[in-house]
Image (cartoon, rainbow, N blue to C red; front, side):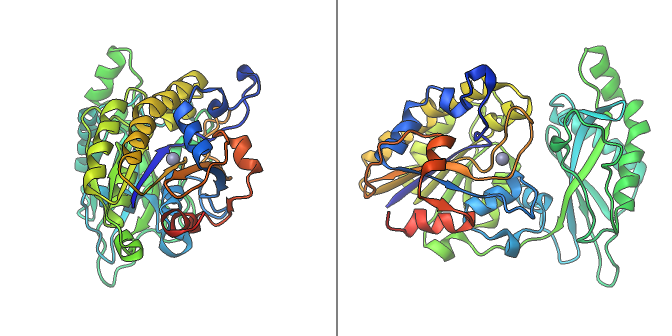
Length: 402
Ligand SMILES: [Zn+2]
């Protein structure tokens, strides 16, 4: 049996007035996703347990069949795994966004999609100014960077499981005054964020950005902290070899933690201009080699964070044409197969934030009978197929009888 999983990140949404009260999924022309639903089934699954943040970090861990109550330590440790950074028993990883805050409002959690080169320069200057051997700033891609804290035996870490931080993308357009790290052990994080403000204000990177009419990066934003997680491999649980195709470190890291290979696609940006065709083609080649092939596309989530309904629809249609279509076509010629389409969590364009709640899924396959449904939040809501503990869905997808 061959398996494919296609994740249009954050595609689930609410009805939108300008779309005649349709959701982007309902308004988009997505005949291929509809075909998956029609030839198979629709249902809903909840990847966002109420007591965890409704982020991609927890939602994707749940989607891949791992109970976050048991396995989730934080978002940053997953991204550290993506970069091949090993965390020792006393080490912590912390997400270090480069953001733009103007008059105490989070105007851009990406600092204008700052370039990796600019980000590396800003973090290098901050690291030199801080000069603390316990702290390693690890540049990633664009605004998505990490801070690694190297702890030692017998010395308590300066933060704890009770340290509270906020995801900057959940603060878009909101005041940030009360949202600096809080709780036991938040002092070091707060201090580092504050130190970056005057340093970045004078930095040559920002002078050049301002001169070019680009958004300046006001400071670092630390969040998503945690110690090193330990997940049993997907192969040990399901006996299958998987591969991940994504442009996002979080998904690369999850793949690494569950023992999957990763395929990097030229021009895969994690943004609206991503190389959809390249991702689809990479999936076709990967299906010859692996039991499970997952294609994750971030563009739908990015469009939602920017509140751009038209771009979200465009991204959905591109995923439909360039990923779902070729993958389904190839699977049909490979004998026994199952194909799953679903987002990790809802990201409504109206709120521009990830939210809790069930998402629609569509599954078809060589041994699944036809429901004749379309793929949308509404059809999923009426389905009898529901996974309230989303981490039970993967086992059903892989091994279940439908
Ligand atoms: Zn997501």
